[in-house]
Image (cartoon, rainbow, N blue to C red; front, top):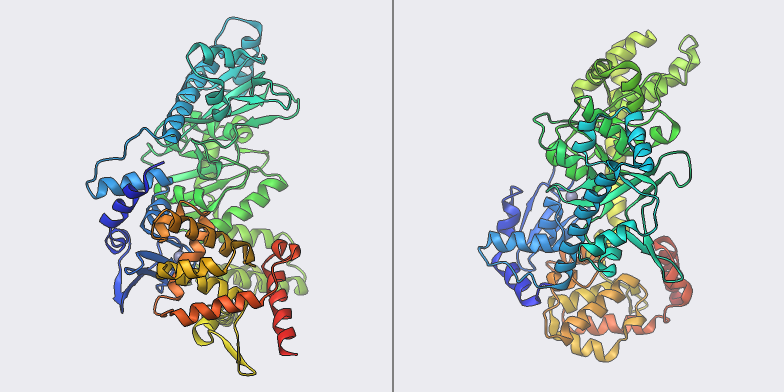
Length: 586
Ligand SMILES: [Zn+2]
């Protein structure tokens, strides 16, 4: 752990307005600054920086936090890396590296490196097993050069070969367990995690081995085993082969489903092929790709699962500045098979003729209808217009309207007129949705109606009271002792606010101001985000001792949370509050 004093100093020396200002063009707006959000694409600014609380919040996508969270998010770094980044930005010496977590992290990296070397040696050993493994990789069409380039290997069918090897290199069992390279059975025995499998190491951007994927040679189950998440491996943030792809001058990336597809594509000369680690692409991986790619071609398997993954990925890319297109593979189940059957030139040909997301969606709709039938034609036009009315540029709209006119024998002018009105109603729908979302979030209602006056009594929502109380203690820590005397953390109905309260108390015990920086080492990211949002909403709201009294009263009047309430989702919780309100009115 980095000492709190050091982190405080880092935050103090990195004014949030300066730091954010080097990534986002900010404008003054009263006591805050505003600009276009770097985390989602938008045309009107909903991203705010608040110098007084040294925090930021985006009302569009909900990203928020302190200067460290900003750096973490925008550079895709972990917490410690972000602190170091900001420290060097401010010209501070780096914190002492004697912390235990940092030490274990570097041990895990050393183990992974040694393990990769071991797997590679085992693949090239002179025995029956190794010969079978080599035959496997060659059977997949890989050259020796490719095997070396990707550091592919083989894990012998042995429960202790890796453990004994690593022990001879001076690693402890605890360290091996932390690396996920060995496992412990329920009976307490340790054993090698990968046995009798061909191995693919996964590298981070700096070229460290961070994890492994292992596949059986035959059809046994489970077919694939991957490293668990460890100190050095977060699968939602890792991209396979991005360390190689980022060296390419080409900014057109090919996103594949599996490691094998990526490897055979690299061998065929497509050096920007990558795959997401984990089962589904994540928003974090999209953000990471966006840093290196101008264009991404989705190249998933042609089966149903692959098509579903394509649709999901298209949604994730919709908000990114990257141009996305979809590669359809005729007569092959995946890119690996296609290249083997038809050769790299045919594949390149396909790549250059890829259809973009709009075409892909139109094609899918087209397959449903028989255009010789007038009724089908009408339905087809309606569906295409719906596709074209959402997130499509005017130029593209014009092109596709022209094509649609030709295809259906309807005049282009008529189609354009319909399209215009669809675009308008879409905009109105989005506006309404935005309003609704804001209302639901309580943003609008909080501003205009901090509490409703009913029967002369202030009936403030319990949820609201809990949130406001947390904000009050953060903005003015002198409230904490009084609140602490009156309120137990388990009295909170909203679990995240209860945790926030506990974190605030722990800060106060240690004599630390409960600002976002201090809270973010004690709370999950989601809760910190939520607090950043609450602070943003209350930026111009003064909260006094009488308000705090009222919040406390409101919480005391509420029933202590039942077991059910603790397990409710947001909708159920809202209904529950509604019931409470109704009861009060009777
Ligand atoms: Zn945003």
